[in-house]
Image (cartoon, rainbow, N blue to C red):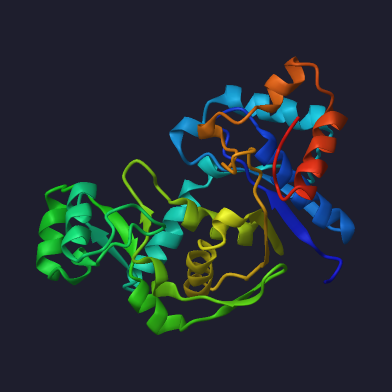
Amino acid sequence: MHRDVVTRFAPTPSGPLHVGHVLAACRARELADAHGGCCLLRIEDIDARAQDPRWVAMMEADLAWLGLHFDGVPMVQRLRFGVYERALDDLRARGLLYPCFCTRGEIKAQLAELGRAPHESLGDQYPGTCSSLPPDVVQERLAAGKPHCWRLDMRRVQDVIGCPTWDDLRRGTQRCVPTAFGDVVLARKEFPASYHLAVVVDDAAQGVTHVTRGEDLFAATHIHRALQGVLGLPVPTYAHHQLLRDNAGKRLAKRDGARSIASLREAGYAPQDIMRSLRRALERGGIWEV
């Protein structure tokens, strides 16, 4: 590993910062520091629910209180919609994107008819219904303003880039299979760019060389590596770390009511108490207790 290591911490400020965020921030900061590199901050606020300035201010206050610092000026995704649109235009021009007019209910029914589990996954395991629509039908529906999203045609992507590899610090060399998760959504009316598109475009723009993130995002790296391939973007090295869980083995997350840093501070914990608890949790296989 070379000295020019660039990592990033990329939270979505849609709620209070919690201990899972702290683990992600520490992993990114530690890897950069170990190799004389830098750790950048990115605010992933494409979702309107993450654009409340109060959440951003609270997150910044929590990070400062914990003593976690980042290098350079933070990148803010909601200021970069034009960049994402240019990437989408490139994919459309090359025939790698197609509009999908199916509703979620229709997709669920289609999957059930095919004998596949009708639940969401990384790409909804979309069966490609709209990928074979005649061009005149597509144009008629677009002209009529029929609601739609834009999906990445993974079969065509695989024809273009094959099955490229990426390096994972914990798991070794991995092979990307673009078709593994169906044709993923890259944009909707209410979301000008999906997480998958924004994250690879932004990692390239920030010069990120090493992506540290939770193991729950390991499978998504197939999608990200595919996008890097078709967009001609650099491929970072990945390091997917373990997640924090409670004594019952349930993952700690905002939606599960994980304890926020603000609540721990108000309860009288000091930053060193939280960091000490985090180290103990990692020694116990990710089981968090304070």
